[in-house]
Image (spheres, rainbow, N blue to C red):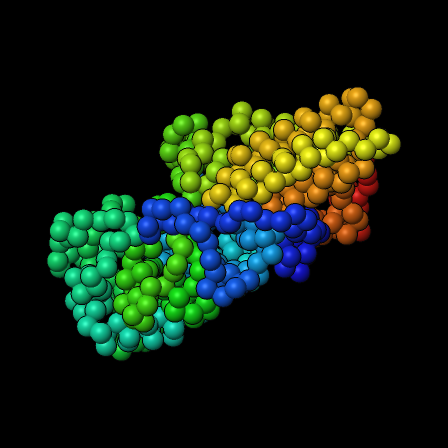
Length: 486
């Protein structure tokens, strides 16, 4: 499988830069323990990873993509380290939000969720995000969910109330360990009927929701109904990755109640802790404030593209701040990210076109190699992307000084070439501007035609503008679409 940069997806890049002896180890901050821990996969050389994916009822916003781009960064990093990664990301296609919108639009639920799932995959491609190995849909795994409920029932962890099935939290002693809740403050018997949680209250939660008019439902031992939101991830992660797997990712907003409830369901059913390393990305702010449509600072990726923003700059900005720190997303910051990326590309062009110095400069080679070693050490230290980028720019500064003085020696140039390749492999961004091939152009034109057939004219216009920005002029004729390079 090839990613959007033309690199082998199963190796994570052009080549792992394991050309020197490793003296460090991979460490991640585990939300469960609140500690920085050495990462050791359950099976040597293999990593099983589960990511909470989108609810496909609307276009994903830029806050969502802060998490999704970081997860891609994590996957690329693990592959670059020589590890094989099995990545599962769910699609939530049955919950209050999807049902509400399908009813509002008067379209079948599957038609609605298919539309936004396609849009999500298009956005992933735009941001050079490698596809997960499996994208399970909640509606296609109801059987597995019911099997999990039967296991919970057999252990006395469920009870019926009205027409719904609930989880009895007091029966699961470890509840609250992930979010560090004070269990003394829990209220027995409290109910949460909605899939949408706007307050963090440690209460019994719904597992199986009794059927209601206008909602899809399935037969079950507890009556007709549909699964609760939390249930899908427990059932699907266990189904595809086993009772215990290596890494579970998500945004910080999912720690409670979603991931806390996942642990209660999975461990309650199997008796085993489901995840060894819980990793969470911090919130994204817009101009220093929480993103809100009412404030006018709510951006989808498509909103930014319609403004003419470069998706590569978006990806760079989202990765420029380490994942556990809040990122303040501003248009000025996006412009600065584009400038930073351009500096890398300008240097690469100069570096490739410059002749090599005949002299052997061991000191210069050692200096660049030291930056390359520090680049790797920064990434192995809980994916510290900011420090890694700092090392890259220091290496570029050092190399530019040498180029000004007459050129890089062959050995120093080799070290610089490997470092640039490492950056491409892990950050998922090319160091040279992409040149559209004819096949790429035809593929974008077909996407535009599909958008027009679906009467999604905003998307069709966006693709036309994207091609225009890359020097491709479209002409709609009675015989079809013609294009030429400007």
